[in-house]
Image 1 (cartoon, rainbow, N blue to C red):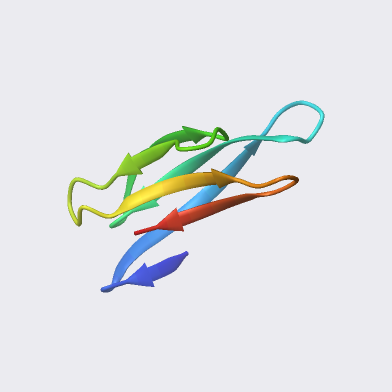
Image 2: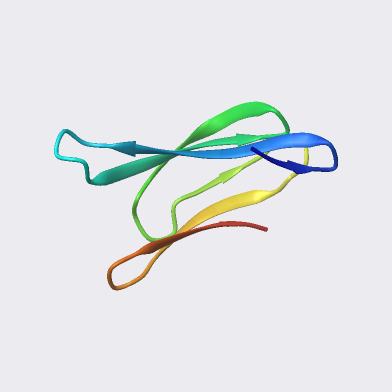
Length: 67
């Protein structure tokens, strides 16, 4: 888990039955803030620090960003 300002941040990738990624569970400020499907523009906002976690899709990959 990464630490920002001494608080835990984490991303957990959920896989389907054949091993393909389908969603990301987001923990920010030490709290589970939600799940994002692997679709362009999905986002979750932390109510404590106001950070926005987003999914960006590429041709054969995806990015998870915190801003």
